[in-house]
Image (spheres, rainbow, N blue to C red):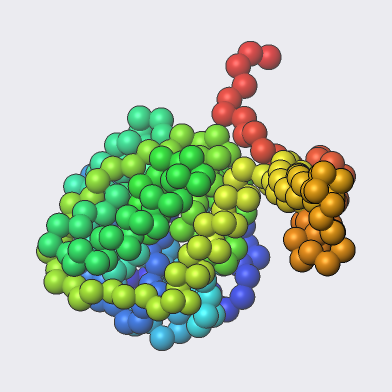
Length: 321
């Protein structure tokens, strides 16, 4: 096996799409033994007739045990690098027009990889694996399904497993979709919003006993914030006034209605206004409403000034001269 390692930092060398498939293996949870996974990937990729390469993303503490007959390139990342920043870093080293993301801890079979490639050949731009929960603790399944259900309802997406450990997509998606923080998990949703054709296939899990994964309160808070951030980006990124203006109009409307009620009581029943806390609440709601509308207007001005920077609609093909 020939292993080429790159140092820490950003890859400055950019590769053109000279082969069909880049198989990107992510090591993020300490030492992994990759020989069985490596053998399956190499066998399926070879039989598919595609030209391919292996690219391994690893941290300094990861032990890389690869097949000696397979050539691979290894990108060593900073110890605390997130998946999104890892993709941005390694994007310049990918030479394939398709990119397959494989997480070393994932449980899937060779047939799953064949299905991914077959669906891409049908014309899809992104094929996401949907994990099977057979034989796994119900708590793990419920947590994952709740997260994915909330994401689908809030964004209108049809993606069913955002934490999938196996996926394949066109390399151009990484250029069209900005990634940062924990947003790598939302890549299929963001690609779908950009107009790429996204689908999913069920994965056949290899039997492996696992314990119950229970996340702390901070993890749930981060997930809620991520979903809210995704909601804003997917629906209001180019029209912030619809979000802030809607909240502002609602708040100001409630405040005005409350003040109208107070004025009516003052003239109809002689009730005092100055000594009633509800009047302060009504004024506060009106002020907050004006502030939200102002934020929305400022956002619209920023969007308008950067209109030329947006490349929201991709071009699939041009027919004719």
